[in-house]
Amino acid sequence: MNHELDRELDHELDHEAVLARYDRQIRRDAQTDSPGARVERAGAVVRQIGAEHDWNGVHWADVDASTADAVIAEQVRYYTSAGREFEWKLHSHDRPADLADRLRAAGFVPEPPETVMVAEVAGLPTEPQLPEGVRLFPVTDAAGVRLMADAHDVAFGADGSGLGERLAKRVLTQLTETPDTIVAVVAMAGDVPVSSARMELCPGTDFAGLWGGGTAPRWRGKGIYRALVAHRARIAADRGYRYLQVDASDDSRPILRRLGFVQLSVTTPYVYQP
Image (cartoon, rainbow, N blue to C red; front, side, top):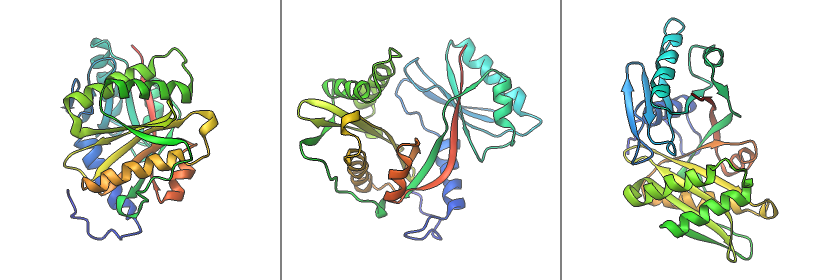
């Protein structure tokens, strides 16, 4: 791991230093999050392209007011020619300041923003406290991935979008081909999956990313989300990661803040459909 920024305090993050590290390690030096996808560095842009069930999109763009429109148009041509819907992952500190307006003008549609939150692993609880009757089940194979998809549908409803199935396919591919890049877990109430979560690992960086954690309505407010964070924090600590990073929804942000996470930026997915 890279620990050159020694001025960070044990219990207080140096916001600018951590943000610079996040931009460099997670965005500019992005690694593929799926064995079937590849990260490309094309001029001013760092982007990922893969199959339809993979994440396709722009991690980073070094643009200004004079170059942004042309770079946006090139990404539209590139992904459209490949038949891929894609996302421009815009952060609130990205430049130029009107980049969001330029993306909308080019046909991108914004999805709800999320707060990028970060915490030092060393300061987080690592012992899951679960409500009675709930246990954590590690996901390591196709049967476990099926439970993850079921938990997603229980938490968010089976809306016909196929998101749970696409996610399950991606997770199974990672578990099979690059198991060092993912940790997945399901919270089970008896034989019923009521929540699921995963941790995306970026070998060679200081960051592990937390994803998921949506919980079945009748089990919300009972500490399952916090337990899933603690479970993954313990694994991240064991594997030497310094920070946990989350793109937090409005529901999870207050929980994460109480656990010690702080806001780093705000990210908005701008989606383009061919």
